[in-house]
Amino acid sequence: MRKVAASPFGGKGPAGTVTSEPGPADRSGMTTPTVAPASATVYAAARSRAHGPTTALWHAVELHRPTPEVDGACELTLCGSLARIMTDVEWPIAARDVCPACVTLAR
Image 1 (cartoon, rainbow, N blue to C red):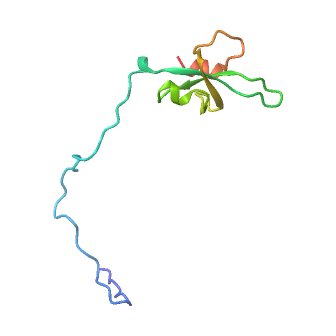
Image 2 (image 1 turned 135 degrees about the vertical axis):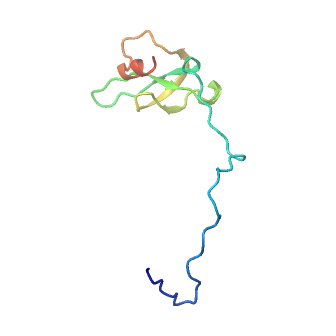
Image 3 (image 1 turned 90 degrees about the vertical axis):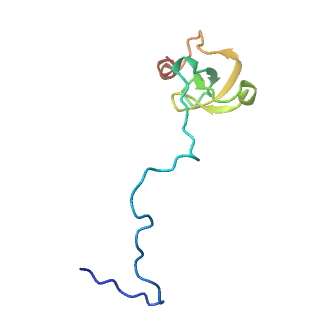
């Protein structure tokens, strides 16, 4: 048996358990996240900036807020880059300069 050292400040020794026996967790005040079905996912088109030799590309952004709140905002795209959302352009884009990663991830 291990000896517990006394506190130099006069504290008490180790306390007993808080509850006498384990029971189920009380989940009455907890909320559970809801996951929207895949068919309900809404994407917006976003345009990135050209960086050095890289051209500007069209990207997909998954919308979690109403469209008026994100119009013109810079958001994180599906592929992980930052791009400015343009709500007047619909995703998928019929253009040549579209991010191939976003095309794959938005399916």
